[in-house]
Image (tube, rainbow, N blue to C red):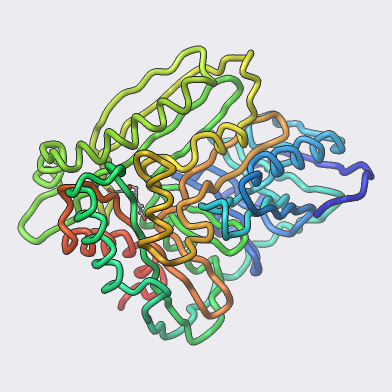
Length: 415
Ligand SMILES: C=C(O[C@H]1C=CC=C(C(=O)O)[C@@H]1O)C(=O)O
């Protein structure tokens, strides 16, 4: 936690095309050690070092993190010659899914390199130096052995079947998202950049992220703020590649599936309902089909203009909309209780908000999906599925397998 009241300096400079750091992909610029990343289609932010950090837990984690960031940004002397969102001081954040247990963290890197619309910049905090070196490629972690996590797949199937029974029996919950974990152990300590490079290459349209050891490539944008504009894309309802089916056929099936449409509508409605109080305008468009290499999703876009009178910061709004029914359920409180009862695992920061915010109130937070918590040689992967009364437990197990693919394949590309 940064506690002193001294002034911090943040210096942002444009990286000119002659600089060797201008040509490489952002994730290739990360030196070894804990990585910070939020990159999509080549644009985004990567950072390293820790100029300041805030840890929080419990139901007030969003408000406490917000307060800390507001206070910290007042202590910054900013020298920013670029002026784009993501310039000046930036904090990367990863927040716990649940009120209990789970820890949340905001980390302000000492060095950050960003790119937006062809402009690349570097921000240094507190006089940190950033020599123009291109780090060597990360080494493979060697052989990978997979074992069951705290919620084995067989247990997951039972939990899904139990949820379906209860919903068919008239339980108060109309949708619940249940998840399970999987542990991978690598022969050598895992360099986070090994995952990041692979994820950014294979899932360019997802946000490849790393914050405090949570590494993944999420397709789901929870909330983005640029000035007074906000944007979100809610995902729920999934199909995955099957032999003999083209992507177009899978997309048509997904569009026509009533079960997936129900699952999707709960998520889109929950987000729109919770965003509206903050907005002067809010447009909802969808669902369309979003196709990735491992899955296809139904996707609804939300775009709005903030109501200045609501005066809410990005982190407060993120706290207000989390958990949407894409990761919690409907109604939220009852679904979260059911998750607790049936899942019987600590989600930690899986399915929580992950992203970044700057000193002017801009930022982007996604939902931490298709991800793993990396601790040296142990990697904990997560995947979950929205369950409604029409769900088939065997298909949900297969769907969760498809959602584990990005990290599984990044860990063991040929295995
Ligand atoms: C909970 C996950 O995905 C969510 C996001 C998109 C589609 C989902 C689904 O169709 O079940 C889930 O709601 C996950 O990837 O672990």
